[in-house]
Length: 139
Image (cartoon, rainbow, N blue to C red; front, side):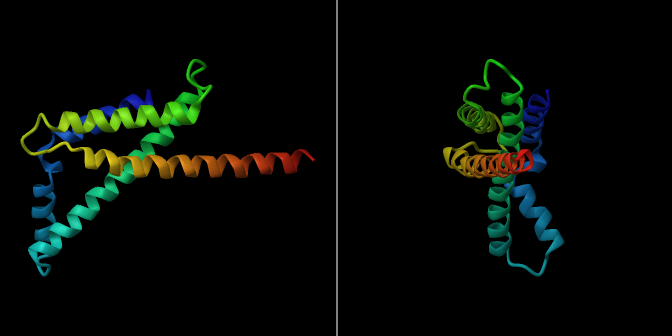
């Protein structure tokens, strides 16, 4: 249920014109009037990519937890989680093509993949540390 709510949040956020790059540039320009327009555009570009990475890092964590709790899916939790997270990323980018203030593109799915891969690495590291700790405490 939490994964579905998160996906819904992503799609609702996409609809809002305040989520566009131009809206972010205008807001940041008002907050930081001493920066040049080009500087603000660059900051917004990097900020939007970090939001993609962080958003899909979080999506993978939530999806992975849901997959573990689902008997039909938990045989291959990492693979299933990555596939579902990538499907969400691709769906979001496709959905963005429906709005004049947004543009969906494959490059953003690749940026989302960075967040997904980082989350898989974090989950594997966490599980490894937890397993070592459990083995040490049982000895």
